[in-house]
Image (cartoon, rainbow, N blue to C red; front, side, top):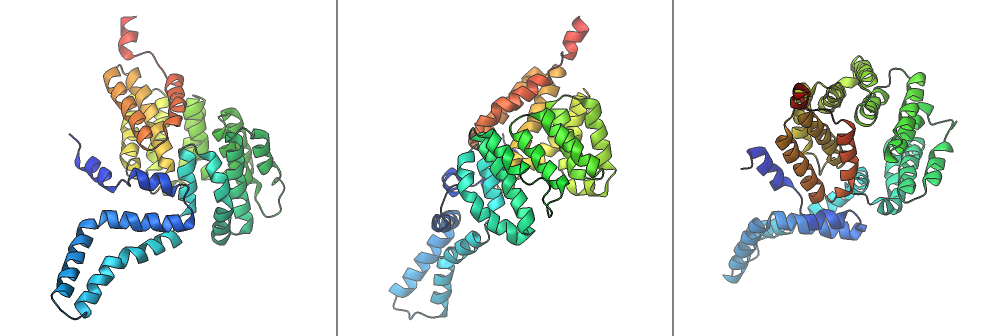
Length: 340
């Protein structure tokens, strides 16, 4: 039986027809979809208001203040839909496309995203962000060399810090699953800025999840913890601690941290689409930990839930990557060790 949090999460989940069409919709279609969603969510209230308004007018009443207020409430979604489109977060939209593997659909969105990013971040920072997205997209559509060139050409740019470029380069290598090169880019960034929390935390993920290097992952995590910016990670700190512990074969404690992170992540899919992938990565480490403890039935249930969730979120293409994480962290079960 679903618990209260699961029921509330289902209630907040946007309908599939909305998320599927919103990902690639034009601006006018975004507006119409937003209006349709608002009417769908409030249809009972709107129906009651329409009935009351029709009854008042049919009874011969003049169109007065009450009727004006009723009509305003009925038409309110048209105004709210406009505000929704005006305030739409293109970063969330693009992240949603990326998580769902729709890289070819991101490229046409980038000019619009760059205009917004330039207003928010400044022209030079926006140039780096867009270059990072374009690099990853080109790599994913079969043009990795062209993708890498997007970031290489910014090397030495007067107004783009080399540390930021190296962090973006690490993201590119992570996307193409070249984790040794990702770690090398992060190491270069830390040579330039040893107090860069983002570089240390990214190194925890690369070394714990993808390279199975528990000692360097722990060193990176301890280094990040010593810096003031680490406190801003919030629930992300649970994820980092969980994957580092799992890499160290401290499975029971790892599971506790991973589950606390996943409890939060499961409520963030619509607001932060990237949490879909991070949640599944945490789940993969949980599965590996459960198997190492000999709790195979529980591990199978978690793995099945991850697969079902990715399917619901149109991100099932990520499953092989998470299965690789599980395989990389496979350990002999405790019962097997005792038997031997």
